[in-house]
Image 1 (tube, rainbow, N blue to C red):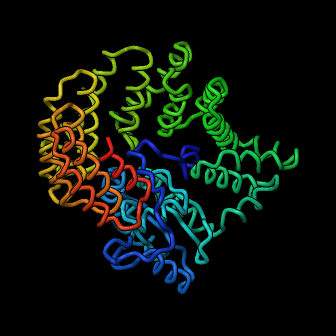
Image 2: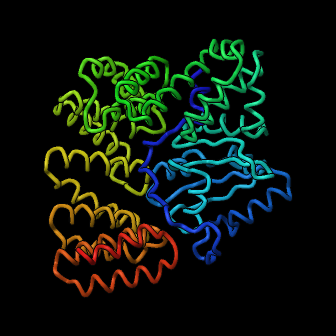
Image 3: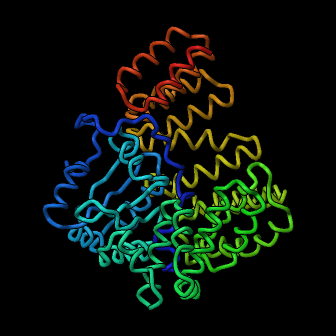
Amino acid sequence: MRRALLLGTLLVAACDRAPPASGAPTSAATPAAVEATVEGLSFEQGRRLAHERRQPLLVEFHAPWCYSCYYMAQHVMTGPQWAQVRERAVVVEVDVDAPQGAALKQRYGIRALPSYLLLDSDGDELGRILGEQTREDFYAAIDALLARGTDLDALARLADGTDAKAVDAARQVLASWHARDAADAALAWFAAREDAVRAALAADETVAQWLARLRFMAAAQSGDMQACLDAGEAALEGELGCARAYELGRYLACGGEVPPPRARLLAQREPMQALVEQGAFGTSRCADERSLILTMAKLEAALGDREAQIALLRRAMADVERRLAGVLEADRNLADNLRVYVEQLAMLTGDYTALDALMPALIEAWPQDYVYALRHGRSLLARGQPEAALEYLERAALHAYGLNRLQVAEQRVRALLALDRRDEARRVVGEALKANGPWFAEQAAALKALLKT
């Protein structure tokens, strides 16, 4: 059952949410230097090749700041199993920070990274897999999608019945709707089935679990706190495995800044603690350890137990440091988990000593990357150190492109304005906008607006 529940599940906390790509044109030609490619193959070339070969197209959405993407690349998408996938499907990588990648992200409604979108040879969606997965779960999911070869509309028609095939199809189609954040569409489809069909499908434990999670998603999206809490408790009753962290994270956000009632939170503490012990520190670790730790820390914070929150973060830091053995380059996903735990602890305690020591080491570990230089510069700027921040932000600018070029420029401009160096700020804005061209209109407008402050 655990595997069935994980197929296509939305793993949004595995890495930072993808930056918005509003304003990105979807039809203009893009320079070859920024078009999302893998081994010289663009998305459009991949689509044509998939159509010619009558093979599915597997599109991997990723970004430099997505450390779950590094986990998958290093620990899962390797070896004979991955080679077999590449024989069965045309595979294309898409960087959502690049203009073409951002347009594709918007086009396909990609809300979390990494996302693995499988299209048939005609371009219709077969399904998607999101976030960090164990090797076992990823290949079980991809094998199921490749073997099925049925697009989602056809799958929904197969699920409109009462036999075992219909139940299996219902499991898959509900999981797919959940992965697309399409709770209302899923629930409307289910409600439109005949009474006998609904009864037969809902009698299946896995279908019932997906329905509970979809009702919870819909309630959370509605903004009704009471409905969100009630539906959340129903969704959290089941055996969710590693996905519990994501659903509990949604539950904690039911009231926005207002935490759920303490009695309700206490009921969630024990099952979450058990998952953390096994999935983050035990022998059967979840692929996305970070979400377990951060969600548990948020639960402790909502319960007002600051000491438990600090102790958990320190334990997680020590565990990662032991596994890295001082070699940050050994595992980028794990190294970034360390960064997150150190950062969270710094914000809790007000002591940034460890963070300020770690960040330069991460920058040196990946010198051709804008990400850590941007993060450190932004942190220093937020702490009122614009001069120190500027050094790192200018280093980040050397490697920035696409959407992140504008993000780096924004932080540089803020630092320069704080230092009363307005002429230099204007130059940075002008250079960034010229390099950006017509892309990312919303972010470009926000950058220009900084000069008016």
